[in-house]
Image (cartoon, rainbow over all chains, first blue to last red):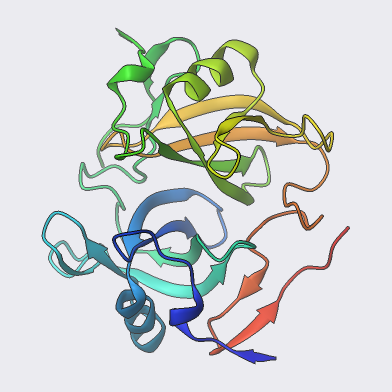
Length: 119
Length: 119
């Protein structure tokens, strides 16, 4: 087996890689946010999913303020090494709108349909 | 309800938005790829998930060559309008390595562990 080194992932021009958070068990896709190499390392070390906030240009320990933390169950790398999947145990809603997931708007019908209310 | 217009999504500097594909029913996260506004429109019109290939700079009707198509069940927009979730019916493996999903490598243990063999 190969030792994992976050430096071997493929980051974009800003040094970031997208990370999808999925709830363990239910399989719900909760959200997508960005990580840099240090976020990846911190997430693995701490077991707390830690993104990189593009707006604040700072580490973003998910739930640090809201309490809506993501406990890491498994971190997976995709075939091209340019996307991550974090399987997590989400406490409370994942979305800043207080909804369970960020993907609460369906557009398939040609109209925007809200699938989920805030908790 | 609001009429949905792909132009109202938030694209990156290259005019692209990430789209996560999730299998209907099982909830498996199959892959992540990119769309531009025209890909989004084509996906909705055709019911066939159509990405934008960054390497080929061309539309990429998933499965057009391999037969491993993605039939659209639902397309969802996230709270920030900068990420999409396509709920799909995947025919065959989603990954170009012939694995069911692209996220087949776990790195949680500090080693790279392959979770899944090609089909």
